[in-house]
Length: 241
Ligand code: F6R
Image (cartoon, rainbow, N blue to C red):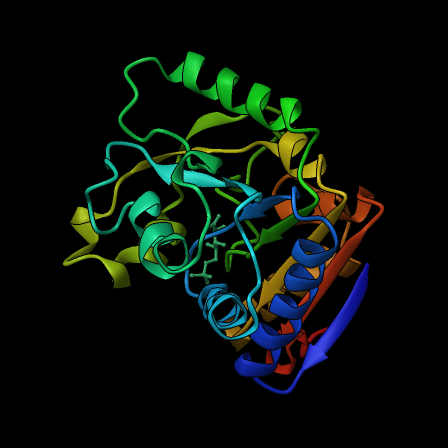
């Protein structure tokens, strides 16, 4: 794993956006794997700036998001589809049909999950996969578990995750208890994985991801097996490395 230490959130966002912008420029038909949460918002702001001020063209780009809350539709303001529209898609020239987020309202979970993995495979995997990391070491919503799960699947969210994400909802009770998440196979289809982290609350998970044993109790540790992972993190998130 290659680690880039940044002084602050703005530097992390600029450095990440620069790598993504370079890919979009060099490979206009690229496939971007995207994440939600607080961490990538600054990166998305920078990408919007590249589009508005430097003509970065997203018209041939395809995106696949990591996850979606189960039970929230695209109109719900805390759904990840809505997040992506608000924070990126509505501000760049990506065709809506090129953007993919798992369907949180599906009545056929097994089929939706299988189709999502087929979609990623049919695209040839992602060129860059952006991932954040939970305080508990989750990537996407692959929560600490006794096994690593390969396929896209429905997952029960950890109490830690529900508490951490309650800040986006009126109350903790409003946070969905389940989500549809990419599994490790589609995440590993990426040619390059950019893992972003900001905040001292991520320091322990980052240290265990980089230095610890590969253990499904710390799901991000499986990234040690991917040949091309770059960790771009603010220095306090690297404090224990
Ligand atoms: C989001 C996702 C999650 C977040 C993680 C960190 O699509 O898959 O794994 O990346 O929970 O969230 P933030 O960035 O809010 O700290």
